[in-house]
Image 1 (cartoon, rainbow, N blue to C red):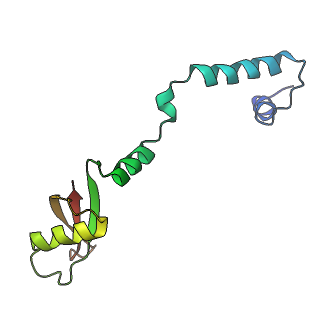
Image 2 (image 1 turned 90 degrees about the vertical axis):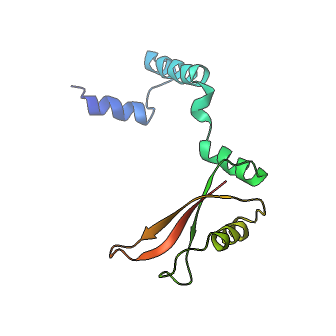
Length: 115
């Protein structure tokens, strides 16, 4: 008796001969997937964002900056300067700055949104 596991195993390892109806159905399913799948399913959003960032037209970038003195308040001009140096973009603007804390609640870095 054939079990479902046996059928899936045969499908996965493609163990049907060329002249069988199962082979024809599998080929038809593959062709249907190739020709009927929307193109947007194959677009890689991360790759597009990376290309935009390299072209300088990225919308927003996140950056972590470790302060020299975590007890002191962040100087906005210094954070903006560090963001420009780290991204190598002299026109980078800081949109928001958030503190990043460790498990004990100590501030260890700043998360910076850059435009």
